[in-house]
Each structure stands twice: as structure tokens, then as C-alpha cells.
Image 1 (cartoon, rainbow, N blue to C red):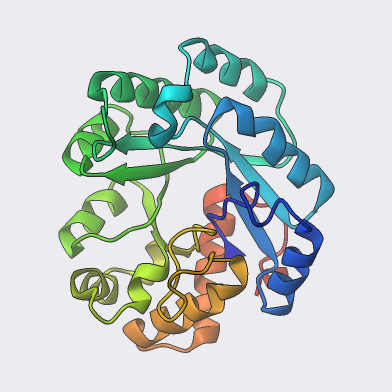
Image 2: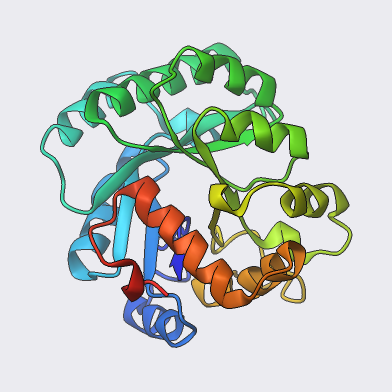
Length: 261
């Protein structure tokens, strides 16, 4: 399995990452994609990828960390991507979050547009974060028809999912679907095509049902796969194979699909 969204540079994983990876591998999660949230994290996620062959990463400017970002960070990201850093498979985590305090919407839109332009320039997918801003995000994406990637933490309606899929995006399916009360998302996931889904934990955030109050971890990904198999009415093995293939195709991971299962 591939955890397409795990903040493995955050606590508690920064302590004894080898042990956390071993536990994940034992659970059947053999590859992680670690998205950076600010310029300060780019080298950290790059280092993780260089230390562990099972880790890929993305580099971007997350809207929740808006106060940390500087205008020159875009030029720095451009220059860094120009070096073709090994293990970098996407730009992100980027996007829009109008739920944060003092969201500075125009500044968020500027940083997002600049990152989408870099995605086009370097022919990389993007990992998108969005809260309370889907209409605005979809409008921006209309201006970047060549951009593709993953909408992280999908928790919307069937119509919303279709709007992203038709723009070339995979839906990141995480712990939300393990909660019986998440009817809207569970119904949408049931109806939307498995060919447009990838698995993610968002560890250490977004705990799965039954583990609230504990840091999430990649080893919980099988619980998400099981919940998805029940919603789609297919075997867990089919979920693992399909979502792994989707992730490998989206992020151009240079390994055989069979090694991900």
C-alpha cells in the first residue's frame, strides 16, 4: 500500500523514524509520500527521502502556514525544483484555507497560482488542501487545465468529487470514511469511481474511528482500505491494487506496481 499523504517530518515520527517505518511496513504500507508545508520543511522531507527508499516527498507552501511564507519563497521553490531533487514527486501541500484566522484570501490565491504555474513548468502533480474554499479553488483550476494531482482529504459530496475528477484530480481518501456518521462523504465515495481514488492517512492528523485522541500513523492505512472496500463492495486486495496503481500513475513512481501491494 501507498500512503499518499503523511507528514512524516512531524512529531512523533521525527523520533525514531526507522521504528515507525518498520511498523508501517509490517502493516503492509511500503511507501509514503511526505508533503512539506513551508520552505523550512523542504530540506527535511528531502533528507527523509534520501535516508529511506520507501519515502517520496512533495515541496510546497501550505495555506495554514501562511504567516511563515515570504514572497521570495516562490522563486526559491522554482530554483530548488530546477535542480530536479531526487524523490520529489509533486508540488504541495498547497491550496486554499479560508477557515483559518486572518485568511488573507488574495495572498492565498496568489501563492496558489504561483505554485500551480510551477507545476505546469516542471510537469509535476500537485497535492491540494482545501477548506471552506472549494468554489474558489475550482475556479482557479479552470485557469490551469494542464494541472493534475490529488485533492487531499476528500470529504465532500458526489458532485464535488466529480468536479475535481473531471479536472484530472484523484481524491485522497482518508480516515473520514471510517466514521459511520460521515454520511455525505461515505455516500459520495460509494458512488464515485475507484479509478480516481488514492489512500492517505494525513498522519499524525485525521485519526481513524476508534483511535481519536491518539496521533495517527501510516500503519492505520489498512483500516481505511478496509472501510473503502466495504463502501465499494469489493475486496480489500482490489482496493490496495487499484489505489496503489492510481498513486503510482499520478506521481510517476518509478517502481513496479507489484511491489506496492
